[in-house]
Length: 75
Image (spheres, one colour):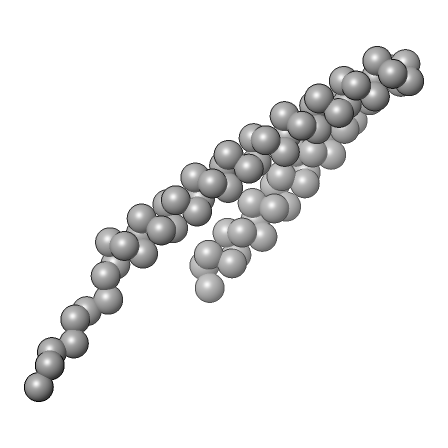
């Protein structure tokens, strides 16, 4: 008879940590690109508060993506 090995919890923990690290990087990239887009729109169309507005929208999007990924990881 062969013995069953217990599930490797260490491997699951590392996998979760790697996914969360990727999510943090993704969040930073989304906010940075939103800031760049806002700066470009502000300079191109002389819209006085475009950078702040688009950066704020990018932050909300990044938080939504992060929460969505965290819910998927918890399942």
